Image (tube, rainbow, N blue to C red; front, top):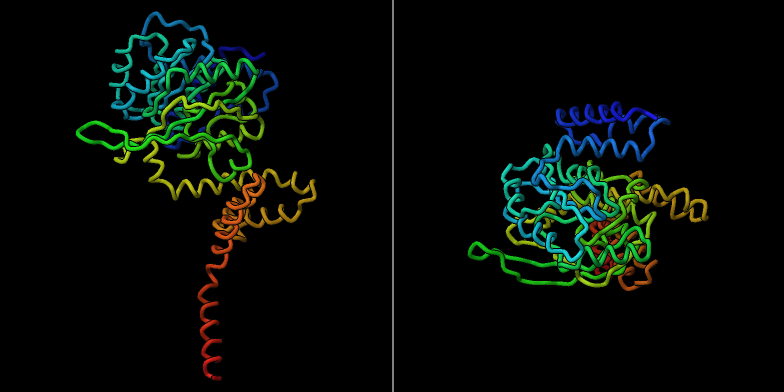
Length: 385
């Protein structure tokens, strides 16, 4: 077995280099890319956790216990101190008490530390890290956690008091890996320096693995809780993705684990009209998100080509390969794929609508020629008359 001190030193070197570089896509320590038979995965994970905590964790309360609680709640944040009080408060008011709240400051101001101290709750853990984006902040929380379960919360959303209890109870009683709850989508508008609720819509859907190819079935990260061990087989958040990184991770999890539904609302996902929330920023990047969505679908489906070929579905596999190589327009592919997923889910009406959209996209380059041909034919017919 490799010496613990040597291995932790390697992680320290990696973190130093990651902080120096202008790029932010250093995904894993150098040792992860080596053939190290003498390094046990759990041992390496523990060493990384120790280094992350030593380097980035800031002590808020001297009485904090290092015993691992059952749940780690991860809140990544960047320059949004005006909202985080309510988010943190909603976690501390949980009926389930055996948790730690990990707040990851992604290069924001030190004022956040002062805000967190005012809560005087030793379950809060505060990490100050160099600004590397949302995916890295989330991964820092995952790497620093030693809990059995992981839960997430955006810095402008809130849990209801029974959120953790509802999900932990289901996971523990049935020995499950992943669970998610219903969520309210709350649309807010700022008036006289305060936000008022315009609309509150319940988002409640049974998990549909095929539909993960075309849309994120989970409204917001706050709805999810999963075993930390799941990450051993699916990896962490993809730091190459500035958005939809949660969708990417859930899509990987859906290939290996069943998503179990708690059919009651346990939190609020906020959407603000003034662009101050994470959701608004995502909406501004809709076009970019759509491009990434196509990338994710291609990536996922191309991995399935061998299975399709072995099942004798060579035509479908060949079409996917053509799309991957760029023979068909992405928009055409997306709508036809969406139609296939709807049909597989026995939602025939929506499937036909998607196929129709795909056909229209496919024919779009030819409509001018078709119209011109129609005019020529009409002229000839009229001329004959």
